[in-house]
Length: 571
Image (cartoon, rainbow, N blue to C red; front, side, top):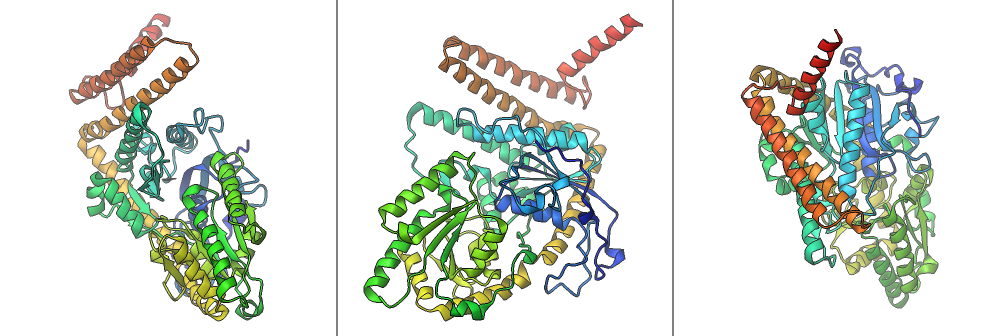
């Protein structure tokens, strides 16, 4: 396990480029990012870009942008990234040892914690892992100016309320975890066949976790989302955050792409080539909806053979993130290969799991078009990368792609069915010049709107906003004399008790499965859990009446009392 030295490599401390005004470079700040698994995906890419945007721009920054000639603010921050897992064979180049610009900034903590319990309880385990990672991040860097979390907000009260960190806390919501369960696909319920008592227990279990997600998110000083679609979904499924929405605590920060990673497309060359493939680039997960592309491609092949036999049918490449530790990745890749064989298109389909950055760029640049199949995708970084690489994008007319793809100009937005995808692919396959024109439009569009310099400027403003709101929160807590603090902590105490209940239930079920305990043991665990909840309620009540201090608990007061007695005896 790699344990970072917490020193930024020499690349990250480069003197800011000449177009950055010295007056705009702020005093160095310390920003700590906390992310569960630092693998290959949109969320991980966003965290890396946020970290890079927190550093001074390098001198050789040749990105063309509409902001190129403007004076840009720079955070000039010391960056640290805490994660529970980062495989050197499955991560972005920026964090690869030893050449990655952020490799020395990464600390892996809590790798001993399980990601599942007998194949289940993934959300519960993720909550426990993010709690541990956040605690370690604070323990190592209590002087951090800003803690940035994403994916799960569970540990935010730990930082703001229990540990009382002196810095601010910002939460980036890619999409509500409530809408990412096995029973839903990006918020759309699906039938999974679970019925009876087990289904009821799961609903209760999930309801508790959803309540925790909603109640802990409000503790953040500032909440960011990746699209207007995600903002609307957060507002819909977490109605109690309405107050935060009205106070503009919830802002949109579109993810960027690092334009320096992509070679400027050669459209003349693309016009002449005859073997440009149709490309799909996604993680191998069922929610990515890649199966619909295989059906659409089979229809396209059949349609062109009968109607336009003279048209060359391009090959199909299905590539993306693949982690052999992830059961779903392994299963779904096998399912897609089986489907391709069933549709009799295996001879024209290539599967490329876990592609490197260079191969990824090559595929996007040389694609005739990129087909992006997720329905109700939160944002989708692949369409942005594809358009900058000069390839038109075909995507479902829902979610984030509606905000990033210009229908008919940089690609096509279609309904979520195989016929609609087939018709859109047919237009491009039969008219290569249309693909080139759309590619040119998309390249210019992304260069102007989604470049790193514009993102760096927006991120700088968000950080300053979060720091300002954090100061307001801490001042309000000081002025309230602890009353506000007690009220805010109450939800946190109940959350702890609820987590204890879930853990007790899981342990009980496991012990019963192996015959270690009898049926009555369930009652004992329930009684113990109720006692725990009562203890927390008593603690809150005693604080309200000033019997114990704001920094104390009933257990803590008892422990302190006996510690004092012990010290007195020793003296």
